[in-house]
Amino acid sequence: MGDLPAVWAQKWGDKVAVVERDRVFTFTDLETEVSAVAVQLAAFDMKGAPHGDRVLVQLPNTVELIVILLACFRLGLVPVLALPGHRSAELEHLAAMTEARAIVVPDSFRGFDHRGLALQLIDQHDVLNHLIVVNLEQQTAAVEGRLRFSFPAPVDSPRSHNEAPSSDSVAVLLLSGGTTGTPKLIPRTHDDYIYNFRACAEAAGFTRDTVLLLSIPVAHNFGLACPGALGVLDAGGRVVLEPSPDPEKAFRAMIAENVTDAALVPAVLQRWMDEMDTTGMRPPSLRRVQVGGARLSDEVARRVRPGFGLQLQQALGMAEGLVNYVRPDDPDIVGVETQGRPVSEYDEIRIVDRNDVDVAHGKVGQLLTRGPYTIRGYWRAPEHNRSAFDSQGWYRTGDLVRWHSTGNLTVEGRVKDVINRAGEKISAEEVENYLYALPGVLRVAVVAIPDITLGESIGAVIVPVDPSEPPTVEWVRSRLLAAGVAAFKIPQHVRSVDDLPLTKVGKIDKAAVRRLFTQD
Ligand code: OOB
Image (cartoon, rainbow, N blue to C red; front, side):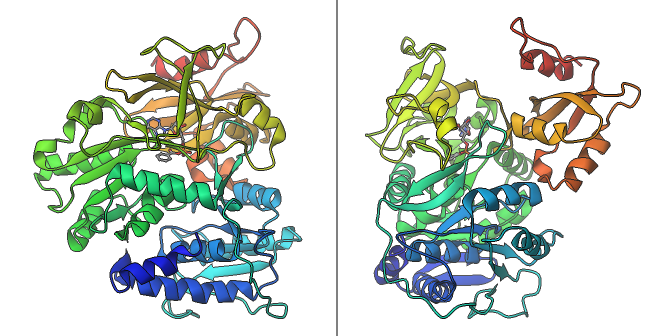
């Protein structure tokens, strides 16, 4: 993947590659910047290929994020993709688990002092030594070339990274939207990831004329490679980075940049449709929306009218690999009622019941998958891998699906214990663990609650040690924020009860817990 910017520059030279507000980078610029940043990184005391030291990257959608990733790929350093919303709880876990040697953060973003937190992490973790800051707030500070990086002076004598990473080595570690107490990491190789974004770009119909608006995080697989930033650049198209999904801002960016395609989560599509319906306007160049990450309701899907010149392409994807897409020339019914079909002819799909027996065609069951770009295991998680994959290497997605009569998949629900909050996956167990660590909490259960705008929100039912002091939403919120938990993982609904409902076998009855919230 590290060779790609040079290949792209040769093919498309002065064509615009990335636009971020008023900053414009051609493919030639991109290659120049990636080379310069790779030289800077190579001067640090870090091992690239074939060892692959990890670099913790926490950046919002910026050209610097794209450049640092490509520079890491070139040297065989392995970026670990954190989200801008992550705080000390998540970053400490990622730093410890990956033994990252460097961390890349903005100075500050949306009022949070990322540099300060990164310095704390460096203090706590022996192997974490290098801090690279992207000056988003203080743009006048040290800027390398046209980018806003500030690199520390190298501590050791310059090292040379002559070896290019092998194509089957790990290129990047993605975060899983996992089901366990601590997030798992997904190792994607150079080979499989290139295959992933090329197959997605082909399925989505991307060409050199595609101008893709990304307001979903580039740090997510969807925004990075499904087809995302890498897929559109590789097709010779253009990425427009717009950090805000707010319809007014996004529409302005789309009109200014003649955007043809936009990748969205359902919650944002709904806001955009509302705006289009009330104003009767839509960005004239916008032809297609790629929508995935969470279930889009058929009702909202039907509002995207092809007659209006706008086509809906639903996608069911996962950072672990498998991506399904509705194709550009599919009939409308496929676009509305399904989440598409695999992007590769080599993707294998099984739909099974609780006993791993294949269900009858058209019936609902759990989706299992295997294929050329789907992982065979999480990073350093042998125990979890034994249950997440079967003995034949099939990945248990935890999603309930069925084959639609058109030969596409429709998502019907899930068996995994996660909350899908506007496309952001949150493990119920992880939030339960944070709550258990609070004083006065005896027992707890966390569940997904239907939410009109987010799709789902987080509900926590708590059995307090002292029933006369029931915890409130505000108390939970302030305690978890103080514990360094990302704001998007904090429950919006809190109930206190005398006891948790149990199933016959004595497990917490999550369906009954959910009913505590939904019955009124
Ligand atoms: C994408 O990736 P992740 O890793 O954040 O989440 C994967 C999970 C899936 O297992 C499924 O539960 C859910 O997100 N999901 C959907 C969906 N797309 C993803 N559930 C219902 N309908 C959909 N269309 O979310 C992701 C990765 C690549 C492309 C698109 C989405």
